[in-house]
Length: 121
Image (cartoon, rainbow, N blue to C red; front, side):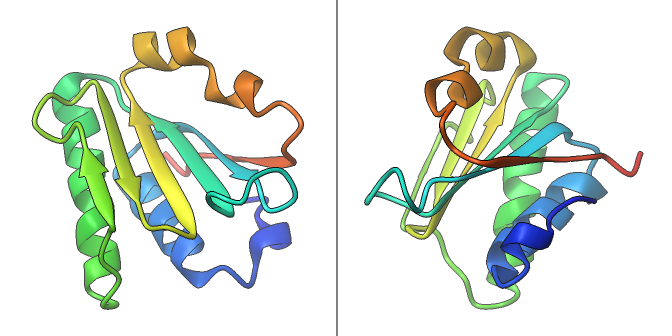
């Protein structure tokens, strides 16, 4: 795992760990601190199906709620194509592969430093 540059971000690490544990693919953390006042980090990951995308979102919610961290806003859990979990300081995006390719958040935020998180699967 290559996440040393966000080592002080405990909740970001917890979210990434939950995604890894449940076999998310292509996990990327984008550091937006110098680019946006809206949030510090985007976590972007893919699931393999609508059901997998929903389950990944639910696992992140569960993992963070055990530490008392609740999202400010959530979207997409019922459909499973794109789940957005807004924790204010960071936002988790879990995509169905086709939608991730279509929206290309990594390209949109291309100036943001990123770390590719290798799945442990």
